[in-house]
Amino acid sequence: MELAVINQKGEDTGRKVQLSEEIFAIAPNDNAIYLDVKQYLANQRQGTHKSKERNEIAGSTKKIKKQKGTGGARAGSIKSPLFRGGGRVFGPRPRDYSFKLNKKLKQLARKSALSYKVKDNCLSILENISFDAPKTKNYLALLNGLALSDKKTLLVLPEDNKNVYLSSRNLPKAKVVTVNDVNTYQLLNADHLVLCEDSVSKLETILSK
Image (cartoon, rainbow, N blue to C red; front, side, top):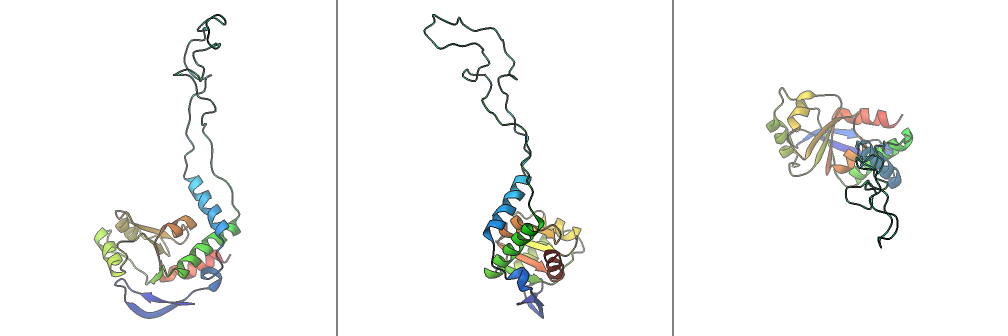
């Protein structure tokens, strides 16, 4: 499978990149994608939610009315969940939502997401780029050249490039990551995936281990 390499203006450079069918053309596994995305979203949760139960409420422990003869139900504490200002029954407690997934399953999920992008014609190969200074207008010009200014894009760089990252940070629909940091959620959340020329070989090396 071959894809043409384009420049920052969206023009064909005449070069082509060979994509591995074991990475970009597999039968997608939806269950693996579901589990990997679920783990990513779970890891984003702080898990610091907390409500007070009846043993944590500040209030009198005096019996609020006599046991019998009132015509109503028994009531022994003002901190009961039945009363306004009382404790909450089975309220949330701080917890860790993260869970473990096997490395092979996470690799399968990323391969499946990449295969979906190729299948939907939502993948472009861009020549390696570098900005002299962090300027949003430079990155916006890049998106306009690729005709992607109105879409959510994910640009995958072969290595850290501070100027490119800072140039994209103010654009709400643009995200820039390195090959080592890309995950299944980001791949699927983007309308269009843009891989730098050198990112392809590095991505294939990581996912073929």
